[in-house]
Image 1 (spheres, rainbow, N blue to C red):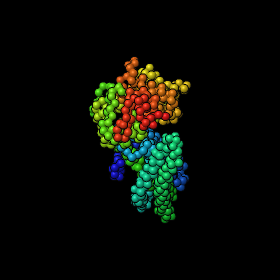
Image 2 (image 1 turned 90 degrees about the vertical axis):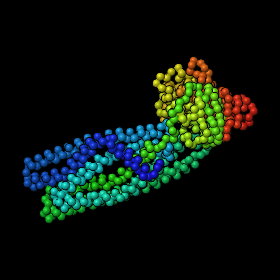
Image 3 (image 1 turned 120 degrees about the vertical axis):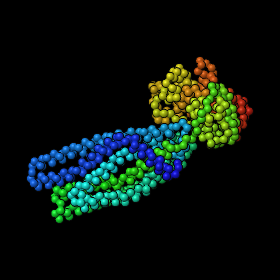
Image 4 (image 1 turned 90 degrees about the horizontal axis):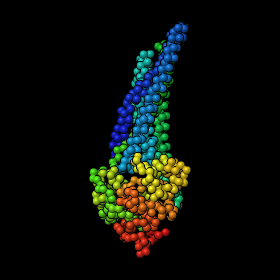
Length: 578
């Protein structure tokens, strides 16, 4: 993430940009809020004038005039506050949306990002931190308004009694400067609290999404203990931040109140001494009471800014993160494409050589599951070129040199653990197919993937609502919809990782036949000419392949037809026969 200085500068740059790109609404809102504060500060002044010029003299006409002025003052302060708040809330909502979009765009960058933040942390950054940083647009007008109000009060007090006014002008900055000394500690505590909260969210997200597998292996207790530990750490960080902020708020409120009380006591002494009138005494006491609010607000500003800065730094961690992949410039030849691994070394793979010819349907069996995971990960484009050895050739061209969009268009990897989006079955199936999708081909894909049963079992058909991450569908239904989505793209090279683990045997055979028919049998021009790699241990899928490759950590250890390997290779039988 870089040094603390770099993070601080990046966070400050985001806050500065937040201000500059909302300058118009922020300026209008700040001016109106400042006018509101000035109007509030003038209320005790007008009341003091009414006492001196109307009540003491018994002048009814003067009383009517100044009561009218007071009513007008209240109308102004109420109106400008509403108008100013409207401008500011609009700018805050707009800026929070912009920040969320920027963070989401970076997270979803096809080239990936290098970050230590996990999915739960990234979710927190794109929501809570975006809101916290945007609320700087609320803090700025409050600060300006409070300073303006304090200056108006100080000038009024100077007019009433010069030493009293100058005492306020000098005392206020001194108190605020003393309070500012605690700002670094507040920033650190708030940043720690936000980081730990994001970590707890991340662990909770992983726990919920992996609940079924955890139950399957009896690991609920270990997962619960892990969450309990990180939750306790988050709680301790939150309590530390709360204690710091609470102590700061208490001290700042006490100092602000003491300053206001000192002003009121001084004014009382001046009135007893005959140096100020009763109306001026009322004005001073009113101003002293009013000053508690802007003093308190200015005193608590460091905690607000600390929270916004900490959130801005976390946003910067994401938006300034380096991409995992470097975008290439080469292109891929016309389909069909071949795929070749030359001395591939990554994860559980060590110097693997494998060639899949164009238009070939190949099954890959990995007796060690980690080898299959490593193969799928490196082909999916989630691994930086510097993190794996050897070479991956797509159509004879090194994969890392191909322009990224073209590489992903020509080589699609559908992982075993895939997610669906909130929407409908139809929107999930056709999400990557473009606007002019052939309805007849969609129907063929639905039958080939057995997703047609997901459509027909629901009365709404393709309009059946799908909850976030496909939670409203069963595991088998999610797999079939995801497979349909992958098949509909017609990628020249398609890699499928265990696409049928959650379906029954009958459906599995139908899917195997469907994949083979759709991608490797020339029919109406929509099938044939594709290359498919099935990383699986499913006999039904392996039975329809042109050949099967048994891949170990150090390379290909067996190769042949599924039926032949099942008869002659004991290790193969153990891996695939159920």
